Length: 527
Image 1 (spheres, helix red, strand yellow):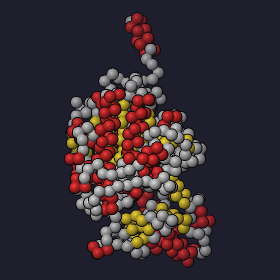
Image 2: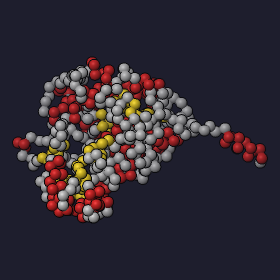
Image 3: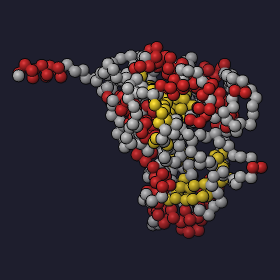
């Protein structure tokens, strides 16, 4: 008996500190998030794709065409956070990529953190605004920190939300320099990627930039709303101060994303060790120059075709270095589409223009008539009005009274469909709509009043850019695809919640789900 006990103790003593991946377990996770990828466009252009990109995952993986984002205001940060954390903004803390700073009275990045300076950029960013763990965190934790996790995307929001708290590095393209950059929040800064003259960067690619369609115009017939059917050609001037931001709305940015991802997999030996590793990759299918599908419909279709070619190149590299039979690959989307444009007036569809700056000014005048002189309204952001809570407190006014009075005034404005106070949303009334608003709310970052505008109207921001936001409430058909060695090919016909993605990937990997997950993994068929 003593010999048996001694043998057991000896076997326990020689287990390594880092938990090694089982021989038959996946060694590499490849999480791909495509900004504004749509299922309907994907299938409409499927005949133009090769066999080893999107079609490979569709034929061999789990496919769902309808992922639900059941909370308001989707953008790159909000969507990437929901995917990686497996929970809603109310819990993960990411309610918008840009949040309103009530002290400075202007929008700021939700990533802003003055404790961590940029590496190659002037931006001070970190992942500390994420309140829960991410899938990438759990990959890192399961190997006692020995697994390697990298995140690559055109923008900081996607890169950092996908990287999580303890990744080796999150890398993105700086709008000012076109270089790959990161932040000192992350401890690993690959020098070959961050080098000013790194060959796979926007700053190098833009010198020879020229974009023409891969196929003749008659092949691009998937989007009926486009107003032109002639071949396009786009150049970027080296004198244009906005050229790198524009470059990031072209499919050529996906080329450099793929180049960097392949090089990281190779040089960091991802999936080629005894630990589970991960690379999170952000691609984009945002309309060119953030325009409309009517104006840039052919460019958008060409972007889909080019992304498919990049996926084929990425999968080939993974198969060569790691083996697709040792990798878990998933693809999903940010769940929104910003390319809808206002219909011409001759269609006689009801429309109008809502000016937030004017609404704030009128509301402040009304509040002064009620409560006396003062700066009662601090600003507007993302259909939310922010009241001056300090002034309201100083004047001994109940905050709910002030919110109710403001809501009563705003509901009568032309173009306003409905108005909700933060208190009304937090009380969780029986309204399905207010429950949805609550899922996207933060008591510290969200506004006091939520405005719902009439569909068909445009929000006009009176700033130097004269930005316009078209109001259209159509749900976007959003895909989720998963390819893993232990999972059978199958189609999920019913809608799934975005919060089910992280726990599903976790189950496939045989690791814990992120700590904010409450949604059960999908019922998928294993081999």
